[in-house]
Image (cartoon, rainbow, N blue to C red; front, top):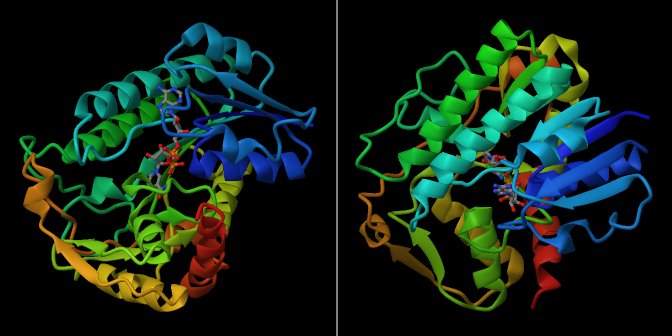
Length: 320
Ligand SMILES: NC(=O)c1ccc[n+]([C@@H]2O[C@H](COP(=O)([O-])OP(=O)(O)OC[C@H]3O[C@@H](n4cnc5c(N)ncnc54)[C@H](O)[C@@H]3O)[C@@H](O)[C@H]2O)c1
């Protein structure tokens, strides 16, 4: 059976992807430094003979080379996210050096690779839904939050350069708001994770800004099926493809929905962006155009927001 290496595989998307391929009897090797991932996320598969966990920083080229020695596929998910409260240096260096190390390693063996990018690269593009051919409109560099989008745009260009100049079979996926069991239970896991945690404890639901900004949320099994299609389809090579859901919702509506679904006594509290420091700027509307995902990957979301939220709430309840 094929061997798949997943960087960041003890994180949210990575652990769900690892379970998917263990179920399909692939050999799966996870490399993660556990900076944001957790052994809890992989406890169901940890003892499987076809599963291996390597505790390491993705920038350790020697460890990565060894793990990739006889690998057929690699999915690169290890990264730092939007520096909301600090850590721009980690976001920039890990996302840049980590991706460089991964691409250099896989290109030596021509390993089919999927690289994780993000909807954040569309930044302040004023014309959603965002198609892959659309402009990437970042704010000024003095605003720290754009460090994440900038790092991922660099990763995209780097991956495309390896695709063209080294003929690496590589696909770049721009994920839009994935959520579900295994998501980080803090802001790192997205607003739905924070709201569910707060609602289950009857705490104030902290909505950033006026809450009228929109997002689209994609249940993790749909995200995983997008990754699997990109990994296993040659048609996707050298492409950038959105993976997400076109179901758009205002953040305040999401908060109300979660309060209602959990039967919570929580009230909504508005948190001004200024409280983050670093001149934080939010994205007003964010929703993907999924035509390319559909035509190249046959990608269609299967889990509605209502159903996905219910499963996610049930998962969060175990931590009460
Ligand atoms: N979850 C989403 O909605 C979403 C949206 C857009 C893009 N993405 C991208 O998808 C990928 C996975 O996201 P996620 O939500 O699963 O995040 P996550 O934080 O849960 O997983 C990332 C994993 O990478 C590991 N990691 C970080 N730095 C590392 C390093 N230097 N060496 C080894 N491991 C390291 C962390 O410990 C973590 O387990 C990331 O690249 C992220 O930028 C995710």
